[in-house]
Length: 145
Image 1 (tube, rainbow, N blue to C red):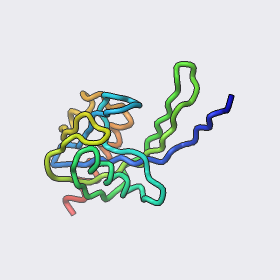
Image 2 (image 1 turned 30 degrees about the vertical axis):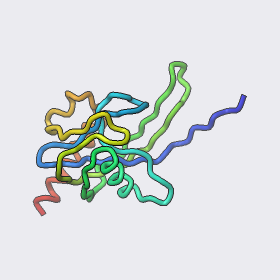
Image 3 (image 1 turned 135 degrees about the vertical axis):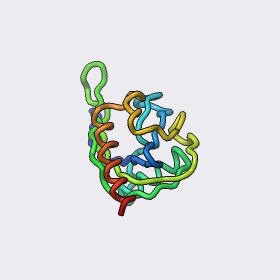
Image 4 (image 1 turned 90 degrees about the horizontal axis):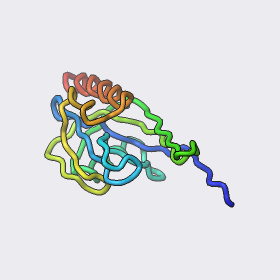
């Protein structure tokens, strides 16, 4: 039987703010089908991480965003019920802002701006909440000039 080789895959996500709210999407496909998270996805060959994050935001929500800073890096390492590695993503998360009303598209079941102080209620993990708060501080500093 051939051995499947799992290697880390580069990905990008975005913490897009409108005032004190951050843009979240409800995932429309596995892994984590139905869970809430930051918009994002794989980086295409020849694409920069920041461009990938902005493209994913547009594809998943219809929002055009302006990204300006790295807010953090998150490793997503998934194993099956027997402990065998199935996925490994290294996700660069960017901070920025966007306007307009989100509409779920491509990989998303839903998309909405959620008050920063309410994101944990959507089931986001501690690491993602930490990245969102770092991004929020970076975005506030950017807006204040």
